Length: 222
Image (cartoon, rainbow, N blue to C red; front, side, top):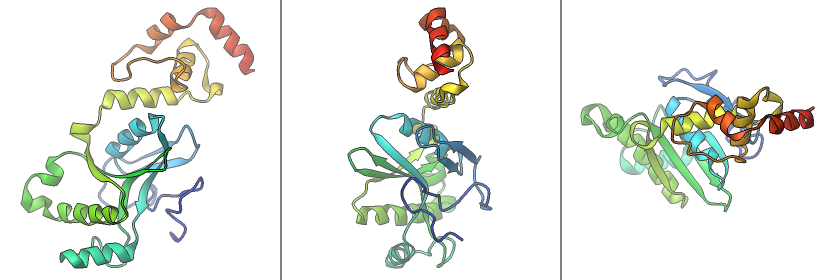
């Protein structure tokens, strides 16, 4: 069933999908990538918010979510460390986000809700650290930088939500008024504002867009 999952390219499918995952996860989300049109599967809000910020960057070519790691290699690493392999010896580990940059470089990211969820009470987090260590060594052996992103420390939620709102109008056919036209221009980076701030986008649209500009756009869209 999963034999063609995590094969890179435009038809990429994540190893784990929201609709079939039965594990203990955060708030899952399925989101259509505004550049590729592919349905992305995120198992937590942290993953989704991190993806939005990363995908917004011009030097990011693509992002693969729930990327399966080679089972034979993770088994070897776990055995070398004296750790029990996560889940069982027949289940693939995954990396939350694998970022591919336009220059060909890559970065693997593990997204966690908080610093304490990994490095807090050792009695409750020691197993999490073991899993993260296996993942870290796996990518290090491949020469790919790996890091943990903490939702509570590393993610600007306002920035991510502004991106989400803007790219919702990336398609010109979704433009119906000045506000959505403003969002369209923002999504295409034809207008630039400080995305880390909160805005009344209807008010911003009035400042940036004239009636004539909007009418001309709507005529061209038809």
